[in-house]
Length: 258
Image 1 (cartoon, rainbow, N blue to C red):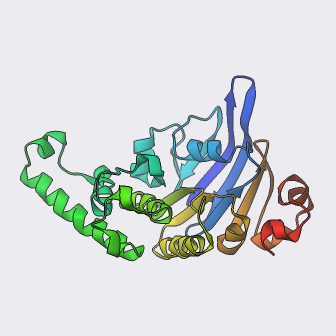
Image 2: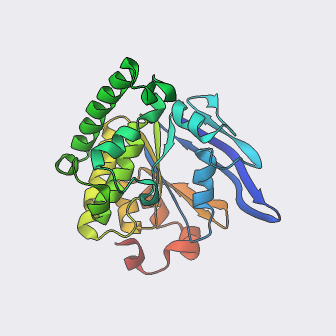
């Protein structure tokens, strides 16, 4: 059974249909990528799956459980986690402190517990620091644990956002353009990181514009155009799909890094 199943997902904003009858199944342990031109509905689809938007129609199931229209924090607690963007990282905190904060969904002590520094709150903090340290080490960020986020270069900030997502212990991790703005070396390091996360047992769903990276990393790809699915398949199948070539990839091999 698919770990994530989306059926006939539709989102309308007034007279505009941003997402039109999108269905997909993501198997456990897959890296599944959604691509398409600007305005194709990729980010809206992501927001719907992560419960940041409520669909106009359709359903979303995680491990067979209907999570359609739940609150974002409920979806995250159940295992669908969208990574944090740079704007949501606490720049005046260290990398380690940021990832500790990312564990808040697992907190046993309530707000009052942290305010009064109860034993349960102290135990939470110790457990979260140990977990945060392990996550940063795993992602190759151990050497910047004590660095303030504001001092980290772009590639490391992106990686820190992924670390924050992992702190929520996702079943499915949604990565929104994780390779954006990176040079070749940073992109390759990020590709290796995403594969390592999958090897850790986390299923990956990502939106990305970097076609060479997409073709290297994806198990399967869904292509959207004007909010509507036009193709789905392996990278090899997508690269030779005439509908995709006309709508998005273009005729030149250089467009897809071949």
